Length: 393
Image (cartoon, rainbow, N blue to C red; front, side, top):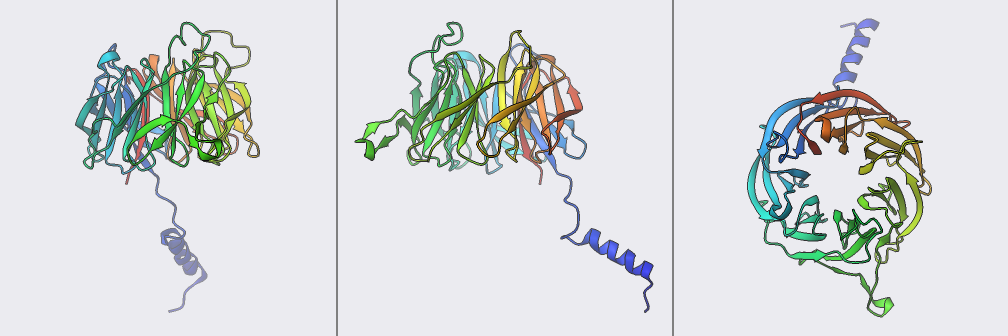
């Protein structure tokens, strides 16, 4: 059979669009779980949404789990379990859930006392066998083992932060643990303490699940070394993010609305060195503000923070050699008190939760400049304060 040039073109076009090597990647949709405050609203707990990375829109999926004040959520790396910090003063707890992605529901596995007041941040160790919890009001951090069925076991460690307090008598009257994450090598754990103006480093025993002061290094005659990152007085460190390229951490100061860039030297003897502090506020702004969240995009080229008061997302360019920051813009969030935001799995969108205006605003991220442009707004979400993505199959 003789094929015309037109037929050949059509066959080639069909091949190029159907062959796996040339076909477009399917649009990825994500399940989104949103934590809320329930004590002063009509919220019942954690809500589920579907996020479409093609349109940048959220579609409600209903109540995922009824639970009290789930102010921070984390999803286990195995995709089976979710954990919530139930921030309720002396009655605070940590909850474990199983995830049913098809129904967008979370089923309670168990719930344990937080062993402190007002847990506000959770994370996992590098093995996925332990859950770290930072208790804000009581200023202590706790380690819970994760059992084979996803339930939380009895705690293996509880340490109260200690040190000289910051100068702000209203906010820094005591230690206030606000963030906890393991180091890159997993042998240490960092804790941002708002009351102490420090990012404290603890040694972590992954076999026992215990935290201890340290580290202890033989080349320093077995002396305890304080390798904490010390911030300027009154900074009030809230959250921290590590550079994707390694070697640097960026500390968000809630009280002074600043970002402090810190260089880490090595893994065994990280000596934190501050090399830059920049304001996250719009130029000329002089009103009340409390910085809230910080994140770096997957490329490592852009850093974002949120401002409660100015009600903006600050956009920074990250110098690829040296890691220095340059404030590029402050973008209004279209609501009040953006306590939290998250970047979607594709790295193309930023979702900001406006706690006091009950909304989530979706911004598209310009891959060349990091600039944000508003795409959609979802209203009627009571007091949203945390958001996590569960990628769809």
